Image (cartoon, rainbow, N blue to C red; front, top):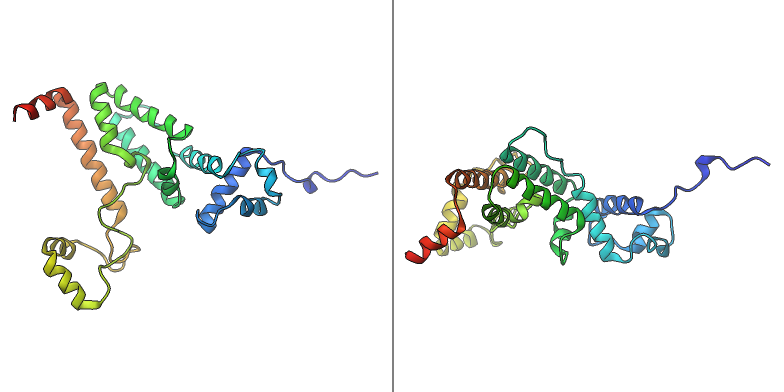
Length: 237
């Protein structure tokens, strides 16, 4: 009796395959629509089969975060701390732009996942190996915040909103009440033909802030800055 061809056999299910499929599905349908049942349908298995590899939806989300973070570029050998941090942060941003749901899931976690912890530990190592004190490294990590993972919470919505609804009259009323906001909004340089329309260029603003932070940290590092000295100065003021 002839044996069944290898191509006809189902690919074995494992944790890596489950997580890859979950990431791809979230990319396709959005994180809100992702469910264990929908993922099982995508993989052609019954929902219970998934629970052998992820205990619940929260564990699935943790694994999805780690799958995304694992694709952030590794440090380039022979590069200085500033170049390494910049390149890795921008690599993280590329991953989050590729998987636009990921930042929401990262923020929703009650604590850092293993891959996030490994990434942050590596970034701390980059600062320390670059000659930063433990003190300055501690404050650098606070200053960088979520930007280390490629996203930041903006004061103003940059998704394309052009202000309150109601037409020119409503816009004029807002400008009268908040003249400085209107001044900055009117003076911002936006290209109508840009893919981001008339909203701010998120990538430019992200890199602008990133470079300000890195330049500032470089200056403090050269000065031998410590928080103890800063606290003393504040107390004398």
